[in-house]
Length: 354
Image 1 (cartoon, rainbow, N blue to C red):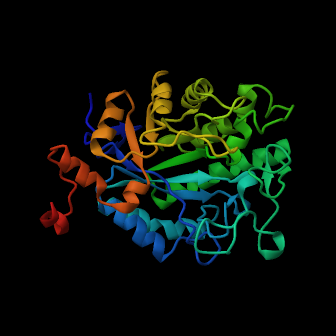
Image 2: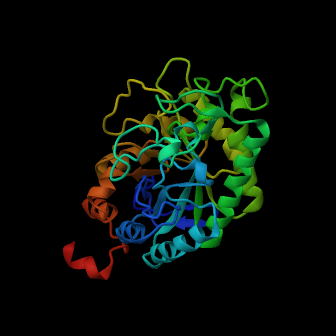
């Protein structure tokens, strides 16, 4: 079995290990224009220095109205592309591959961020700088302001926006793009029968509901034949009548056929549900996808190197860490040392610490 410290190659991109930093929203764009700034340079620089094989930056909106909050990063214009470039360059200098999560929040857009800005919770009213949200169906997700349903043509415009954003990401030097199809955001709103009640070509059975996601993947693959593509899925809605593990495995196989190289198995986010949160609580979802021969990564309270290695031993290709990496940006180096691996990712400036 591979070690978490072994390299992994995805469509010609060799990652130095299988300990990856998951995308985490920062809500820290002070200029409200989607342009990453000093916070992002410092934050992502520290994570790249810490030895990760793949650093994926936060959900970055493909259109302005796709932002979760006004403080979200974006990749819908060339100013944003150019601002990401030095962050990408620094990650490469530190030996890390770097990807970007392409996102559209749909009915969960135009909210007050989780911390730091726009005091309060819930939707940000239009009068206060918010905007009308859109979704696969009209109504309110998670008690937020009512979204309106996209027409088929408008939905196809969103596909074009994902493709254009991926091209900008490649121009900025990113090694990989991740299509965000999880956590109750727009593509998940199309995938889940709990929310997609359409009776046109973008709704109905699982194949119809997966149409938009697969068009995004196919479009990016056509535009960028050599770019590795990841897809993040909520592999269960944790609710009766919602997406199941078997559905996720089917979607993952379709995504692979459409041109995706790896599927990341997360969960939930569309409806309130009783989720059994605990160490490695989503690993079984990645194992289910791996069982249909789709490369996959696991995420969700992975706290130790031994736990991460056990997940990879189960047939999953890599693990992604979030909060643990915030607590210790050098976590990949620490785990490698704890497992007795002789690795060359330790910056010489920090060798004395190990």
